[in-house]
Image (cartoon, rainbow, N blue to C red; front, side):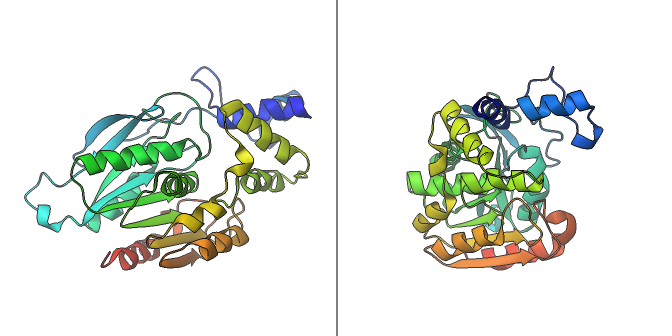
Length: 300
């Protein structure tokens, strides 16, 4: 079981290179293909940006614990600088990249906010093939935040979905960041819970393999993964926080969201979407999502 867990945890935290195809869904695999996936894990292709912004932007490379690539959608150079309310650092989820967040950046643009979209390590234009599900990505959030500070940006906000939300929470805890406000979509409660949820979704018992995957995944990437605990990170967050959640989410439970909400130390708001799962909320709830964001950011 340990040998199997080592293979699976490696595949979970390391994206495949261009020469390796993504593992198909189980129902499409042959018997030998299913056995291979069961024993050696699932291949996830390295996330690559699929589109570029339709508005003017700067492509910026920053040196963090890895080199990270960012898009800065900045209207400050225009004649309407007095209408810009601030800048939002946008953080994608697991298996995502910054181009997948452009639809949300355009909503922020309509609300008169600039955006700085990050490719976390292992994704898009950034360095490497590795992801740590928000642990080491937290330093990359800090790097982007400091970059904006050096540019003289005063009103800095943080927005993240899933893994990106967790990276934001850890960055605030570890580096004492002071954003004006943060918006968190479906952050998981603990590393163990998010791994266990994936076993439950496949109708596979969580014990003992979920724990083994968490253990070996942390060992392979140089950190104690059982200590990756956003529920505890929330206790250090005193800035205004908007928490968003899809009530049909099978990857993050309502109990995890409620625990995070209870631990947030500052002003906090929870908005939920009845028919949404662990997905882009703009797909089913764009008007509601936009209004929730506008209401929260008003006056902040």
